[in-house]
Length: 269
Image (cartoon, rainbow, N blue to C red):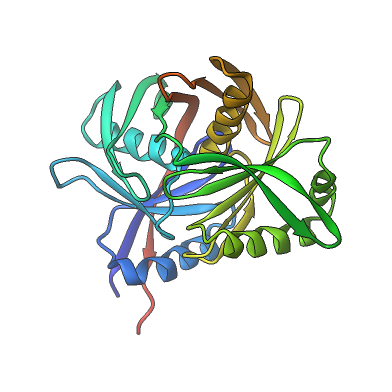
C-alpha cells in the first residue's frame, strides 16, 4: 500500500491536515475523509505542493481557507529551514496568489498575517427557514461565501439548535449556489462559525474561521464606511482583522503551530 504523508497544524483551533503526497483531485475528498476518521480533531484537509514556481494549496472541497493558507505557508518555511518571511501561495478558490507574512515565535509556532482575497460582493439578501424570515448580510468571497447573523436577528436562535442550523446552512448554500457557505453567528465581538463545504461533504462548527472573520469585518467596514480593526473572540481563541473599504485591502492576523507529522496507509482498491 502507498503511504500518505501529512502534517497537522493548529491555527486557532481550526485543526488542519496538510497532505504532501500526490493525490489526484478526484481522490482528494476520499483521502480527506480517511484522515479525518483517523484524526477526529481534524476539521479540514488540504493538499500542498512545493515543487512549482509558487507553493500551492488545494483544499479537499476546492474551497478557499485562510487558516489552512497560513498553515501551508508555515509548512513551506519549515521545509526550507526558515523562521520567517513572506510567502506567496496559490490557493484553491483564490483568483490570485495569496500573500502570507510569518514570524516564528517558538519552535514550529508562527504568528501569521494573511492578505485576504477581496470580496466578490457584499449585499443584503432575504432568507427563510423554519418559519423564520428576514434579511441578512451576505459576503460572496472567492472560493466560499458567508452569511453574517447578528445577535439581534431572528436567525440567531439557530445557534442554540445545531441540527437545525446545519440544515439551514445546507439549504442556503444550494439556494445561493455557493462553493461553500459559512454562517457567522455574532454576539458583540464573539463569533461562532458554522461552515459547510459540499465538495468535501463536511459541515463543522469550527473553532475559528479566517475567511468568515474577514467577511464579518468587511460587512462592518462597509456599513460604517470606514477602516475597521476588530479582534473576534472565537471558540478556540482570537483572530484580528484590519479592513479598509476604500482600498479593498483586508489583512487577517492569527497564529498557527505544527502539531505533528504522520503517515497513513492507503487502503487497497
